[in-house]
Each structure stands twice: as C-alpha cells, then as structure tokens.
Amino acid sequence: MKEAMKGDILPRRIISGFALTGMAIMIFILFFLVKESLPILRETSLLQILGGKEWYPTYAPPSFGMLPLITGSVAVTLLSALLAIPLSLGLAIFLSEACPRLLREFFKPTLEILGFLPSVVLGFIGMMVLAPWLQERFDLMTGLNLFNASVLMGIMIVPIVASIAEDSLSSVPDDLRDASYAMGATRWETTTRVVFPAALPGILEACLLGVMRAVGETMVVLMAAGGSAVIPKSVFDAVRPLTSTIAAEMGETPVGSGHYHALFFAGLLLFLFTWAINLFAARIEARGRRWRE
Amino acid sequence: MKSRFLKDRLATAVLWSCMGAVLVILGGILVFLIVQGAGALSWEFFTQPPRDSMTKGGILTPLVGTVQLVLVAMAFAFPVGVLTAVYLNEYASGDRFTNILRLAVRSLAGVPSVVFGLFGLSFFVIFLKFGSSLLSAGLTLGCLALPVIVGASEAALKAVPQDYRDASYAMGATRWQTIRKVVLPAAFPAILTGGILSIGRVAGETAPIIFTGAAFFTPDIARSLFSQVMALPYHVLILATAGTNIDETRGIQYGTILVLLLVVLGITLTGVIWRARLRMRSSR
Picture 1: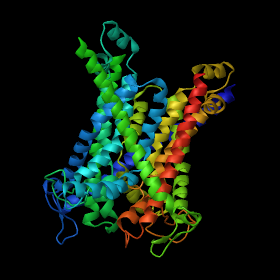
Picture 2: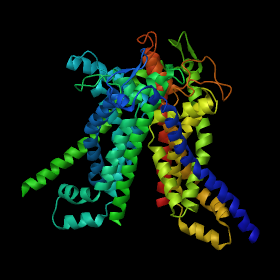
Picture 3: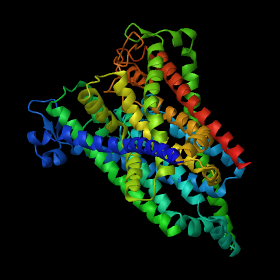
Picture 4: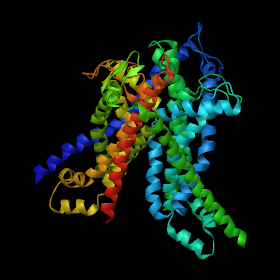
C-alpha cells in the first residue's frame, strides 16, 4: 500500500515540472525581448523612438522614430475593429438567439473554418483581388493601403469575436429570456434589453481579444498595407505597422546592429501592448463570472 | 403596437444577412482560389521541387518542409501541452501558484506570432546556437501551439465525469494510476482532436518561421534537424512578393495557395468533424 503511494509522488513531480514550461516560455520571451532591445536605448533616447517621425533604420546616421509604425498599427487595428465588431456581434446574436438549431450545427463550424484560413492566404487575396479593385474603383495610386489591410484584418478577427461573444450570449440562463417573453416582449426587445446586457462582460472580452489579435497580426499587413512608414492622413494611404516592419526587415538585418535592436524594441512594444489588453480582458471576464454567480 | 413587431422582423432579417455575408465571403474566397488554382495541380506539381529560380516545377520541398515543421512542433508541444493540462485539471488546487500558471498559459496564447519569431531568433537560433534550422523553427511553432493544446486538453479532461475518478479511487488506485488508466484513456479522443486542430493552425503560420528556419529556396528535402527547410506559407509569400517575374508565376502561386488551403482546411475539417461525432456520442 505504502509503495503505491510512493509511486504517486514521482509522476506528480514530473507533471508539475512540465506544467511549468508555459510559464518558463512566457518569462523567456519577456527576458529575451528586453535583453535584445535595451542596447537601442544607448544609441538613441526613448522619447526619440516613441515620438520620432522618421523611420530610416538603414541610413547613416540611422533614425529610429517609431511613431509612424505605431500609428500604422493603431490605425489598422481601429479601422478593422470598426468594420468587424458590428458584423461579429450580429453573428453572435444570430447564432445564439435567432438561428434554428439544426442550421447552427452547420454555421458554427463554418465560422470556425473561416478563422482557420491562414493569414498569408488572406494577404494574397488582398494583393490579387482587393487591391486592383480598390485602385480602379477609387482611382488610387495603389490599392495596397490602410483600408485594404483593415478589411482583411476584419475578416480575420470576425470568427474570434463572434465565437467568444456567442459563448457569452448562450451562457445567459433561459429563465431570463422566458421571463422577458412572458411579459410580452419580442425577441429583439428580449435580446437588446435582457440578454445582451447580461452577457456584456463576455462581449467586451470578445471585442478586446479581437483587438489584441489585430494588433499582433503580421502577414495581412505585410502583404496588403502598402508598407510606407508615414503617418496616414486618409484611409487610402499606405501604412507600415510594427508587425510588418519586423517581418519585412529582420531578415536583412545584421545581428547585433542598432537596427536589429530597434526591431526587438518594436517587438517588445507589441508584446507589452497585447499583454495588457489580454490581462484587461481576463479581468473583465473574471468579474463577469463572479457577477453571474 | 405593430411597429414593435415590424422592428423585430427587421432585426431578424439583419441578423440573417450577417450570417449570409460571412458565408458569401468564405465561399467567395474558397471558390475563387479553387477555380484559379485547380489548373496548376498535377502529379508533377506535387512530386517536383521548384526549378529555374522558382518559375517552374512543383512544390515538393515546401510541402515536405511544412510536414517536417509540424512534426517537430507537435513532438514538443503535444506531450508538454497534455501534461500541463493534466496538472491543471487533476493535481492543481485553486492556490496562487495554479492561478499564475493559468494566467501564463492565457498570456502565451495572446503573444503575437511575429513576437514568437523574435523569441525563436534570439533564443533558439542565437542563444542555444541551433542556427536557422528546422529545429529552431519547429520549436518556435511548438511554443505557439502549446497554449492551444493546453486549452483543448483541459476541456477534454474536464468532460470526463468525476464518477470515473471516484470509482477508480474506491478500488484503491493512486492518483497517477487513475490518471493513466482511467482519465487519460477516456479523454484521449477529445485531446487528439484538439491536437489535430492545433496542427491546422501551425501549418499555416508564416511570421514565426521567417527568421528562425524557413529557407527562401533549397533544392533538397531537409535530412537533418539542423538544415533549413522551405515551407508552404513562406513559399506563398515569396512567390507573391519577391519573385523575379511575378506575372509569369501566377499559375504556380495560385496552385501553391490552393495546396496550402487544402492542407490546412483538410486537417481542420477532420478535427471539426471528429469532434462533432465525439460530442454526439457523449450526449447520447
């Protein structure tokens, strides 16, 4: 009997050791991003990086102003969220409240499949289909721009936002709906005044996670956003967000150069920004859960 | 009074059209790519490496490279992910340590893919001196897949009824015996489905492998963990943006995209269908 108990301790130790891997990776990511990005602060000041408007990393002397890149990231994120969130919430409400059960078994996996489309495929669609169309329709210099990338990014985040929001909506107890119907309310009134407010924390979380994904997404903006490092003045200007800058430039940068460290600094910014959104979303979700209980 | 019901009808129509829009977008993309790419598919396309600075030939090397990358990533992420889930669901109590662990896995799931690429470059390629290789790129993809597998496995373990465990304990089995002989076998089909879905994600990722091991071009299939490999998604990017005569290779581009799509969606669809069948069986 005792031997059997002894045999239980070793597996437990080993498994808890493996369980630490995820945490270790997270710590290593933070450590290596900081380690590789700190040297850039010796070359130029933090204020010049965050506030500088000139990104000329290969000039002599180089200039590492990331404001255009940051603005590019923010612009694509906001515009894609603006396009995608209304559609996503419509989908979530549809799947949770209005869709016949049998069809839902078909529609939900379909939505999931859309979320599995590789981003490089969507980027390709942006280059080959959307860009020429935009160019002709709006008589532009180039169809590769902020608007193009935002539309595709919107398609990328719709499945994420919709599925999390749908989970939240369908976890609202039916008692609430029944009570509302018993008062003579229509389905739309029930949805907007009872179900939606009850599911609000989960819906906020869904939107935040969609935004988080848009900030960090790379291939779509690399292929479809046009790639010029200037602060955009219209939705048809080309932009160069942080992610695509890293992806496009890291390959040709000598390890240990100022440019190399600057790109890691851009990565650190991305990491911290998405992490903050993620933690905030987790907090809202946790609070919502407590409230529901 | 009537306007309330009219509003309800109108809202329902808008909701249906949201779903319609998504079906049109997805269907449009798929049909377009299949129509454009089907002509390029042939036996040679799958069995020949690219030739003549990638303007002719097939996609054998990137296709095999993607399979190799997925194998390396899963060899790392699958066991680690499943064991993490076992710890979180079977051993962990609701203490502070477990909460931090959960938070770490959740945080990892939100790290942008290009940041995984930077991490892979600085850690696997440079610090551990693996170089730009199949091993570095595969492990980077593994880190990215880890939280996905943990999430799916934890859900699978949670779905195993507590009765199973109680019955096993009542027979005098230890915790580990219970996990190995009762809980894991019961949860395994669902865990495997999660693994398959995460393969679908890994196979289509580009940003993490660009600077950790994906080759612009190699004529040969990698024979060692330390050689560079071509990969389908990266091949698509190169053909579309860096080709010498982009217009001439249009057919190859659409063909490559279609193969990537078939690989990713084929794997994903298998996982989705398998999962649906599991659910049906368990709800019966």
